[in-house]
Length: 116
Image (cartoon, rainbow, N blue to C red; front, side, top):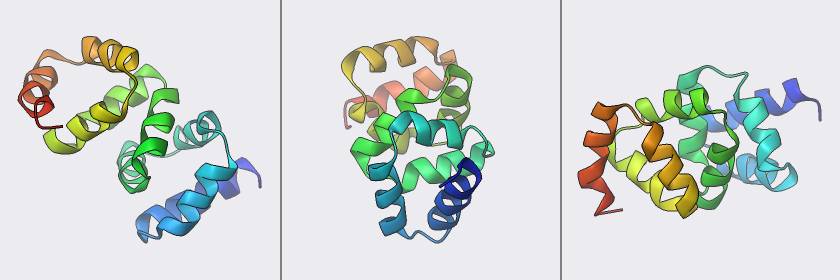
């Protein structure tokens, strides 16, 4: 499957909340490849895609997004989904990402971390 086909399939499945094709694609493709495809999507679609992925794949794909894409995606997730994503990240990635967050977003996230 070429990159455009993977992107279209991921986006259609995410918008339809059809998790079977999403899980199949993220199982068949390395998380770095899924993240590369996600960079072709707008930030709202990246958030939607991340929200539809199973937790381990969500963290894996997120960790391969570049720093700007991570910050853009995280900025609109909301406190609880962002805290859940944080909980799924490896500890070193969690610390690195938290240190890159804008102050206001870090302040919003901090109380939720205790519940994640």
